[in-house]
Length: 389
Image (cartoon, rainbow, N blue to C red):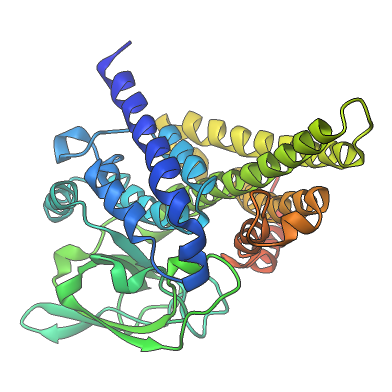
């Protein structure tokens, strides 16, 4: 076993311990009070998990992407909100790591992130764009003395009030077209967040994601040099869909496990007698197996493209990861609802070992994170011109 393998195993062992011993005991309280999962994030910081994917020469541990995805699954089994915060942070880290292009400022920033375990949030959604991440209204604007600014109306900023830094998409300049975008990294002391609205959602309550007017002043070196079209197709879209799918799979897996525990308990109460809920559990297992295979296959395709990332820019690849998001976001709540059907009233109630209400509510947010109808519209256009899907 190599040193890298040992480091990866240690990382996953830490994640599982945090999931079981920290995230799980606080999950119901985080959900009930719609509060940030501070205990889980503190534990992740203590184990340096926030810099796990940063290369070793920049102070991180260089953990492979497949293990980052597995970590999202493990956290998702215990607390969907904790898993989502971790996943969203890792998406921002991947965006920088995979598109550094030797930029000294970003390399130094990643060293600081590793040393201080800084938490990064994203500001990609914007009022007025209809949920299209490929378009922006906000623009990078000169502020004098070589400084730049932007102001962005964001309907949601996941854990924005708790983040150390923000990765924001904007137009390249006030005269740029909506699709001519850049990615900007700003520190907390360079940014102001003006709250717009409150946060009392049905699910994923601990992500604390109200809307904000985001304003920042920064230097030109804080703009990622890579073309946004490349960043979006090679990293933002596939990494988001893969990490989200893994945490949704985690949520669905725990719902299934609770339903299975219920069926086994029922069987022990009446040995030798048929357990009607067991048949329903079998149907839920089929759905879970399909979701697991979909997620595993997409991860393998993404990892296989690491030596030739341009493969991720093909229409076939875009459709592949778009379909992963749609399938996972539809199957996860179906599995959770099926688990509730197996458990009956004890699954519906919030105070039993078989409760799956939080799982169902958290999973139902999946179809809204980059709305499925928006993705279907994109797919419909691609299917008209794609030669090989």
